[in-house]
Image (cartoon, rainbow, N blue to C red; front, top):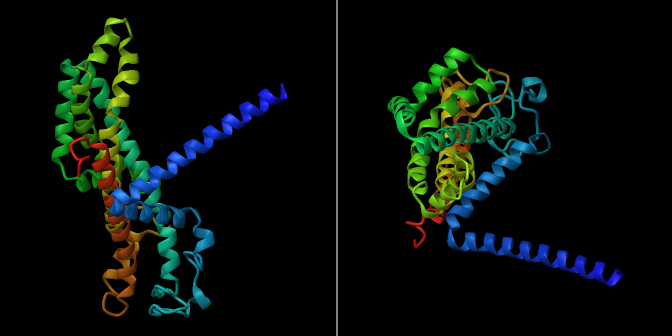
Length: 303
């Protein structure tokens, strides 16, 4: 009995080590094949790390007045790596804490909006008929409006706040996900294995979620990853316009707006630092999203 138990334990450990080895080879292969995509993933992970561990990473609090507020408009130095603002607050700390809002809104709004769009596309494209036609015309109407205009209207109706900001940005990305996933569903539902499942008596819902949905994950992942950077820009734009999360919560867009007007010449580091954070984050998302697209899209795998 002991020998059998020991053999089973050894087999389990061997399988786990094999899975870990395959995972490491996959990561190394991804880095070698898509170095820019790996750089983008590193940037995204770094921003996530800063957002999660901001209280331990930031040298000061986001609203802390250094030396009672007397350390105002200090240029970047060894003590203040990004300088201080007009109220004596450390800009580096505000940028680090601002990553929390950008990452939260970016990830939640993206996967909420693309998830709803993908679900709508899956159901309506599979059933077809008038519901599919009506849904697509409604998506075309939403698609015809600029995304920022839709977000502004939704925030104006719902009011400011993190939850309302997420809802506003999520609505923006429902049509794009619905259009992409719908085209994939129309192809997959005519496949032979779907016809075989239907002939064997599988229910419609089982066919949709067991056979069609998994085979439409590649385009969904592509649209989700490529949308993340756009969601960060939309959040920053709304905050820049004063429609984001109200103060005192730190926000890259609001810090950029508040400093760009008055201190662009007197203290240029004030608008430059949050602007760099936005640009770097969007750049990382775009690089990573492009790499994921190249890997999952069969037309681009040979590149």
